[in-house]
Amino acid sequence: MDSAALPLPHAASPTDLRKVMAEWRAAGETVAFVPTMGALHDGHLRLVEQARMEARRVVTSIFVNPTQFAAHEDLDTYPRTLERDATLLAEAGCDLLYAPTASTMYPTGFATRIAMDGPALGLETDHRPHFFGGVAIVVAKLLNQVQADVALFGEKDYQQLRVITRLAADLDIPTRIVGVPTERDGHGLALSSRNAYLSAAELDISRRLNGRLAAAAARVRAGDPIDVVEHETAGALLSDGFASVDYVAVRDADTLEPLAAAGDRAVRILAAAWLGRTRLIDNMAI
Ligand code: PAF
Image (tube, rainbow, N blue to C red):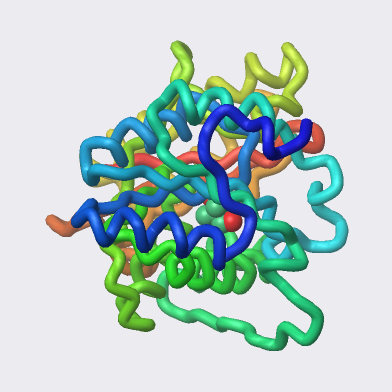
């Protein structure tokens, strides 16, 4: 589709984006920002809905960020549905779609990297070591470009949310970072653009992940040893039919540091597991 025909105002470069932002700021309007990689589902629309409650104007970005994919991952096949996404955003009350090209975001000569410790250590990084470097650089760029009052991220990618919160604090980015609870289907499966890869049989198995985490959370709350719960929950997922389990981990909800015991601090359980070629992640508060 010719992007000029998209059903809502849109910008494809930081310069075009800034013109719109300047008009809104001149009118004294507040701005909320929802960064996405497109292939929108109800979880994204929930973010837009929440964004509308946070500010007068809503900007949503769609950019499939190459730097957060490893060479063997699904960058080329990641679903790209710009026309449909734009229609959904228009219906959801988004005011502006920002869809920059890869050469706008990463022009020839681009040379900057961001390396993070803290909440970026372990979990996803153990299995996707490139991931948070790519997320950090693109989110830092997007937050700088949009300069919103508030930016919203789904709690489904909980480690990403903690990393971005840390990044914004460390780089003095004034945009407030807000996490929005995970949107789930009627069987508890966390909505994700990659769920589209699941066969009917895999979908059936995938819906057990949330229940396994809920059972594990209950055991941790009851005082069962964390390492035992992690190990046995991973085993239960394998017996449910998951092909492999990258991790089941109980962590401090803020720093994501490993814990010997839950105590009375805020605690989160996080998991990543494979079904065929699809990697699922989920998490919940304990
Ligand atoms: O969660 C996502 O969709 C992406 O990782 C994000 C935050 C838009 C950065 O590309």
